[in-house]
Structure formats: structure tokens, C-alpha cells
Image (cartoon, rainbow, N blue to C red):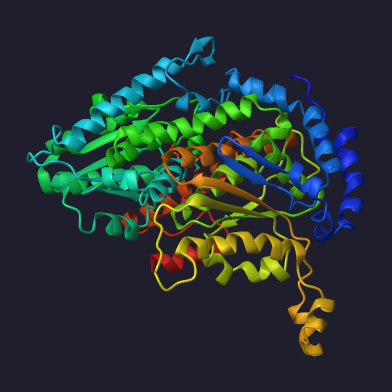
Length: 553
Ligand code: F6P
């Protein structure tokens, strides 16, 4: 058995940070924010994106200590090993090369000594050709009609990333124009309600179904795929499947077995993790069908820009590295288990659900990459909603209840500015007023003294006091177009990898999803036996037996 590396928590650098916590806990953000030179050092303007982390409970000394921790965790070496195509996902014996999915055509990125970039571009060229033909009507359905609607069937990583990008692009003027007259829908849940919602209003004659599954074995996706195959063939005859169904998968054998022509299958590779797959055919095919390949190529270029930034910038100027280290600081040292993702941008409404999977499936682990039990918690509980909607929902808890580090994400130029002539500011300025105000409200809070000076009645003072000292980061993007959406995605993907590299875990496997799946198989067999042969429920504990029996009655 290979020898294990020591856990990061036994290093002097980790213990040094532990010892530093008390000092920080005794320092209020109100005071830290008076130091302009500290704030200047914590404001970064790079690749068009502004990151302000001056509202973190951290001094410049904290940041130096975090860099020392990064050194102790061999962060740069781990990043190099990822970019070098080493099999850093050791429990699945795979390399982790989602960066290759958005590399330029002339880049060289090796996996097992072979440059994978030409293969990536072979698939991208095939997507471009196919999506052009569907969009310009030279690929038609079984009855000769152009296919103007697409249903992408997939779940988890084969759904959340593409949904986030689609939602973000919908109102971008360039993307909107190129999507004119077309619809893209996503069928993820095996719940028949989701099927009904997705096919309502669609005509099989003008619909293309894209089955997206890395493994092509995921129970929910395969049942939904069979359901839509039946929907197509009962309306148009079984031979229509060839014209109305295509697939994205790493398992082309199963695609063919399902009845989809391998020529209409779009490959990706086992070095692409499901939750890191939006830049593969998983996202690029459905999104190119909707918006045209040139728009999606810009998205890939934005992600690639951050890949280069992450690999080349020193840690002090490296957005994903800084964000990742600050997350580790908040979770492992300050003891804040959650993180709120708060885009002040409705187009980013599906960003938090996507990041939830990328983050929580990657970093919610209990053992180190070498299999040693961890004496500390990893991963955050991620959640979020666009502002200002969230302000009217869960912000009460964030302001006066638990401390939850927040990510505020804003854009300078709205996709859709509106200015009513009698209003003081435009709708976008109104939205952004809140983006700028909330981080200060969290950081400064409001003291009893201030309230007294405002003549607030004494019995209300405790209720109206805000303790403040609540950390956040602010990310300001120039706008929200395909390119910036790609940048934002890659910032979070790499930030999450940084956290995992520091904690010394494998952020690229997901064994934790298996147990529930195998227990569902047992239940499925029981339901089948009870429904077809009236077999009694057996082999389950008291509670499950009672619930299943009631369900079957
Ligand atoms: O259940 C979790 C998971 O394995 C994810 O990691 C993955 O993104 C999702 O299921 C879908 O898997 P597939 O693309 O193979 O259908």
C-alpha cells in the first residue's frame, strides 16, 4: 500500500492559523475596514473582473498565513498535476481535465502522454456542424419539418450546468437574437410531473430529444429517455427515433444499444467529471442548438481565460486561489459551515443550484485522498438566490442569526437596462444599490449606541441591533454575456478544487451518492414483485416495511 501523506491539520501552518483565530475573532470588521491600505491590497482587478475580499474576517497577516498553508498543502504542485493530466482522481484512476474542454485548438494538454485537444475539437466541430444543420433546417424531422424545439434529458452534472448557462444566456441580447423562434427545455426529474411539464405544448414532429448521460446507466435519465422515445415513436413511428433523438455520453456502446445511431452520438471522456462537464458536449450540444455554436464558443473562451489565469497568476493575484483559501479559512478555522451565493442578477438564478452540486459533491468528504479519516469538516453547505429576492426571504437569518459568509456577485452593465423617466435611478441601479449596501450592512452592523442616538425606544434596541462582523466577498463582472458566464463558471470550479487540494481530499469522485442508489434498486424490485405477483413487502426494517405497505395499498 502506498504511504499516506500527513493530514494538513498536523502541519505547523494549519496550527499557526488555528492560533491566529482568537486574534481575528477579537477584531471587528468595522475596524478592519478603516485601514485603507489593507482594503486596497484586498481589491483585485484582473481579467475584467473585480474581486473585493476586504470584508473577510482576515488581516493581511491572515492572507500570508493562508499562502503558507497553500505551500504546506503543495497547492501549486497539485494544480500542475491537474493541468499535466496526471490521474489525480485516484479512487477512479482518472485524470481531471475539464480545462481541455475549452482549450484553444492549438493547445497541447496531455492525458497518458496523448494530446486530448484534437479529440475535443473533433467533437466541437461535429457539434457545430450538427447544430448548424438543425438550426438552418437542413436536418429535418421524420415528417420533413424543421426541429425548432429541443428537450435535453439528463440529471445532476448532465443537467445543472447546462441549465445555469441557458438561464444566464436567455436575456443576453446577442444570444436571445440567435435563439429566436427556438425553445430549449430540460427534463431531469424522474417524477412524471416533470415529463408532463416538459412535453406540454411540444409537437414531436418539431422536437429533437438529446439524451445526456455520462454513464448512460443513470436510472432516472434512462427511464425518461425511454419515456420520450415512446412519445416520439407512438406519434411518428419507431423509425422517427433516428431523426428525433441524439445522445451525449462517454458510453457509446450503450447509446447504440438504446437505439440511437452512433453517428448521432457526441462523445466525451472519463477525464471529465459529471459536475465539471458543462463545457463538454453535455452543455455545448444543447446550448449550440439553442444559441448557435459561435455564442457558445465565446462561453468556452471565457472559461479558458480563467483556466489560464488560474494556472499562471501568482497566488496574491489569483482569483480562484484567493477565494478557495478564504473558504477554507471560513469553514475550517472560523467554523462557518455554510456559504450563500447571492448574484444580484436574475439571469444567474440557476447559478447557486449548479454550484451546489459542484461544491457539495466535490468537497463533502469524510476521508483524505489516502483514505484517512479527517479530524476536521470539509465542504460548505451552499445555497443561494438572486438579490434582491433573497433579501425578502432568508437574509434576516444572515443579518441577525447565524454567521454565513456570502458571495455577492454583481454586473456593471445589465443585459436588459430599463429606465422609467420618472424614476430617480434605472432598475439596474436600483438592484445594484442593494448589491453595494448589503455587504456593508453585514460587516458594520448597527450598535445599541447608534440606535439610542436615533431615539429608538429602549425595548426595541436589542431587536434592532445588528452585531455585524459578518464576512462576504464581492465579485463585480463587467457584464453578463457568454464570455463572462464562462469566466464565472471556471472561477467557481477552480475555487472548489483549491479547497479540496488544501483539505487533501479527492474533490473529483462521488462515492457518497452510491448507497442510496443501490437501496433504491432493492425497493424497485420489491415494488415490481408486489405489483405483479402480489408479493408481501419483506427484507426491510419496520419503518420502511410499514411505509411501503401503505404505499402499495
Ligand atoms: O448521482 C450523482 C451523479 O453520478 C453525478 O455525479 C452525475 O452528474 C449524475 O449522477 C448524472 O450521471 P450521468 O451523467 O452518468 O447520467
